[in-house]
Image (cartoon, rainbow, N blue to C red):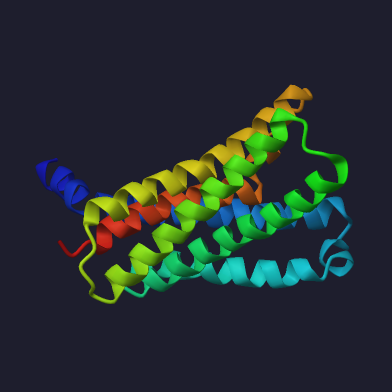
Length: 203
C-alpha cells in the first residue's frame, strides 16, 4: 500500500495528464463519429473544412497523449499548438462577432459578455503561449506565472463548455451527447496541459 501511494504521489501529474488526454480523445472522436452517424455518413463530405480541423486537432491531442505516456518533453510542441489553435479561433470568432454586432447593432448584454469572454480567451491564450515558448527555450520565466495562466486558460475553456451546456439546458435539452462535443474535449485538454506543465517543470 505504501509503495502504491508513493507511486501515485510521484506519478500523479503523468497519470492525470494521460487520463485527461485519453478522455479528450474519446470525446473528440465521439463527436465526429456521432456527427457522421446522424448525417448518415455525409458530414465530412458536406463540410470539407472539417477534415482539416479534424486532422490538426487529432495531431495535437495525439501528440499530448503520446508524449505524456513517454515522458517526452516534445509535449511542449503540443501545448503550443493547442494554445495557438484555440486562441486563434477566439480571434476569428471575435472578428466575426464584431462584424455581426455592427450589422445588427450591439444592444444586448449577451453581446458584451460574448466579446469579454473571447477577449479574455485570446489574451490569456497569447500570454500562455509566450510564457511556455520562452520557458521551453530555457529563458527565465517565473513558474508560478505559467501555472496561473495555464489554470486560468483551462478554466476559460471549461466555462466555454459550461455556457454551451447551460444554453441547451435552458431550452430543455439534457443529453449525454453534451460530453461528446469539441468544447468538452478542449476543456479536458486544457486541464491535461496544466498537469503536463507540472510534469515538465524544471524548477
